[in-house]
Length: 440
Image (cartoon, rainbow, N blue to C red; front, side, top):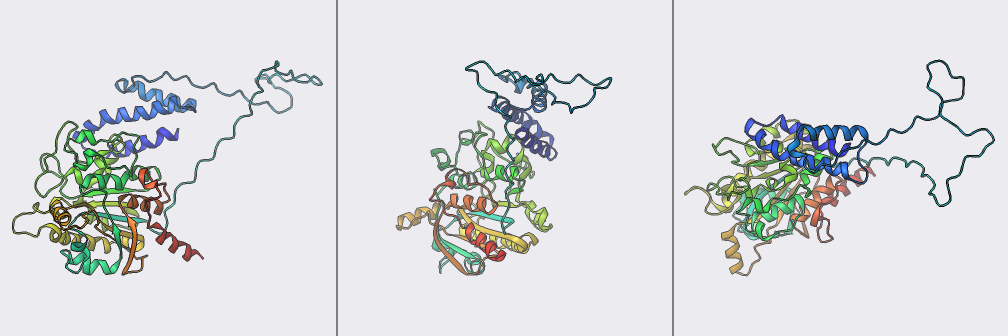
């Protein structure tokens, strides 16, 4: 029953937040996904109990368009009533079950017939995941101008290198999987490896959609009763109004406005597991909501927060209005305001972790670095937390899989995809060691 209850509860909660247009689009896809989950449960080796089977069958009968190829459900027979206690039978009582005659041994089954198995003891439900000392993660994704241009002595990002860097721990060997944004974003939230389409930032949206069986960090958080939000700068509908979970139509090619929102910076819109049951529509929101959310009490702020500015403020050259800061300088100005709001929030001060990462390399900078013999994939990353010793460095090899593995481990969750591999190093141990020391 739990198998279908959790997705349905998530869908019901999501529906309350949808406008008419989004709800109409969601109904068709969510019925297909939900019926797939129900069918899987009904046809699996364990089946469903009679109550769950009846509820599932009723759901599918109410929506016949989504119930093709659904096997007929036959409720399992109800186990017979156990033996009544010894004593006289009074009027109105059902007759006692037949028992063996006294002194006569029970009849043995015919030779070769298997002995009836004893009823299996129900398996205990696994213990719910528990977060460690970090309860709120804020992950910012920018476009890298190169390691030296970000953290070096001639940095193009003075707030990052001179103000924020001394407050945290610098990951000196953090590297991207590819210069494009989409393969790194997808790897960060799901552990899926880059493909030829994602390396091209997927001009044809439908080719990069991942099936409902491919889970994300957001799915893990939803199942484990943790919360998540993605905040995307400039995300709006076709009329220019702020909107949630914006992405191209399945057969369309995206043409983002210069400097504005682009789906390639929003990895959450590429997973059917989030699109079909409404999680994306509920939790993937415009960045304009971030400042207000940060002012709330810690328990009203999401446990995991993914934050990405638009093309200009991410640090992509040639995306900003003429005469305004561009590239790393634009990203640094945006970071100063946004990181300042995060560091001042009650949630961060209580048990927060700010991760400033680079989810892509600025194409112009990457070309210049490659021509100079410098690896454009090496970008560095920064961790800032009240629970870390300020001013430190960590020289281990990290990448987007490491970000996923680290966040999973901070919240007691198993790593997904390539994040489970031995090469995916985790920095979660620094925080978990702090928790262990505090408990000694």
